[in-house]
Every structure is written in C-alpha cells, then in structure tokens.
Length: 132
Image 1 (cartoon, rainbow, N blue to C red):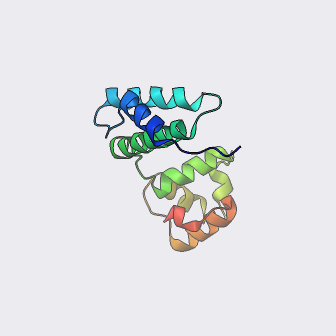
Image 2 (cartoon, helix red, strand yellow; image 1 turned 60 degrees about the horizontal axis):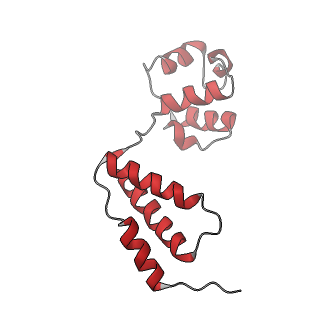
C-alpha cells in the first residue's frame, strides 16, 4: 500500500502544533517535547513525519545559535587524546622531542610545531591538523 501525503491532514497538524521560529528556552523545550511525542509514535503518518522534520529543523537552528560549542585548542586536543588512550606524557618523549620539550608543550609554554603535529597525528591516528 502506497502512502500519500494528505495536505488537509497536514494543515490540521500545523494548526494543532503551530510550529514557528524558536526564540526562547521555553519554546525550545516545548518544541523538543512535541518532537519527542511524534518521534515515539508508532505508525507515524507522512504528515506527522513532515511536522517532526520541521520541528527538528527549528530546534537545530535554535540550538546552533544559542549553544555554541567552543573550538578546542591543539593542547586541549592533545590532553583529550592522551586521556582517551591512557597515554602518559612520558610516552611522548621521542615522539615530539625531549622530556623538556614535552613539558613545555603540556604546560602551554610552547606551541606544537608542524613536525610534532605530524608525529602526534601518526601516534594517535588522527589528522595532524588537530594539533596546529
């Protein structure tokens, strides 16, 4: 059985949910609740799926502008990868230089050079650009 989109039913859902640009936390929470309700319905109609997609788009737009994720620094990325892979600073000796060099980098006294970034990228199996 082929499902077809029913504009009249969609219009009724639009009137019921009244989706609009989200401008406040309260509106965002309400939109999330509506989206979750629709998402957990069994046998959603095409019209409900369209409303759900619209709500998700509105929620994402609000959250992209109101919940900025700060970019990590090369040093914060190094710390994150070291922690995630349970690597101690001593293990970086020989990879990026002497113990003194490692200490200067992890203490933020010097930046990671391009050659060190390349070596770290190989060690952690990530793009070296994360360390520049």
